[in-house]
Length: 81
Image (cartoon, rainbow, N blue to C red):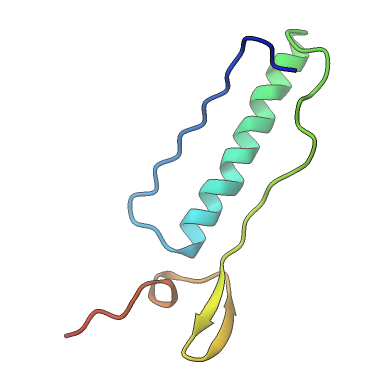
């Protein structure tokens, strides 16, 4: 549906934990949705090529307990001192 067009989304997460990675994924989808919206509004596209939505959440096990939305300490391996 995009024809000869490309939409390139680049998101660099320098110091990552579960929250920043998932924010990058969710934010990238929002950027894609906005870009397609601009193409639709200008009539460069007749219909949206987006068929579903994307969002992310981090999950894991920290100290034996399931955790939702990991922070840096929960998402990073222990560094020996």
